[in-house]
Length: 281
Image (cartoon, rainbow, N blue to C red; front, side, top):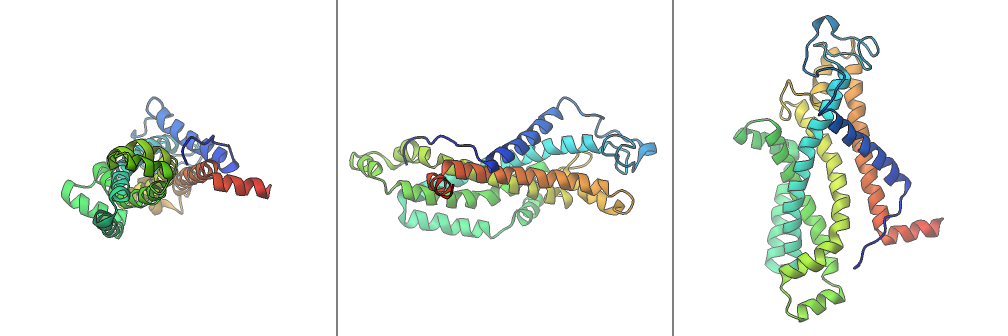
């Protein structure tokens, strides 16, 4: 397992990478430019269809839908990224520690993870919102808490495999501390699996953030959010269906892109899957 594997491009990796790159580029572009000021109200232009006022029309306040989608992409990533990275950091620390010490420490860590995993992100957001108030902070904490047991289990599973290797046994025989072994020998070998899991959890985090914003537990108005756009659009589905279609497609493509990127990275980094693909070809 030691040593780095060269990443070989595959269809899922390329398509997922392109969709993810478009998402990130759109989010970054919204920081410096949007077709219209996304919070500017034009009542005279309310509920205009695509190409009637702007590329994708306007909402019930006359705001440009394209501008709302662009800023909504940034707000989604601004919540999803820190939430997943925080959950990954804590979960990986717990999982690798459990694999290193095993025994009672492993049992306690896994049982606590089971308890945390039993609470979905939406329920966690409600409870955290009661403590710190609804908003982006509650959404980040809720998604992070939900991700901790996921990464704890992934890190523990792959770390346990690494701990069975001969060079780990040699390091232990030389008296190397388990923490040092974990940092210097285990982490480099499980990094690939963790990176793949990060991309998959990012897709779920974007979907969860949209759900929380739809329920009013995420990004607060007037800041644009894809979930908030869906919530506002349900009143005008018969008059302006584009208000629901646009953010729905944005969420679907973002989640699809990150899932494909994760699948592509897994196939490219896993030598077993590469071997099967080569044999099938």
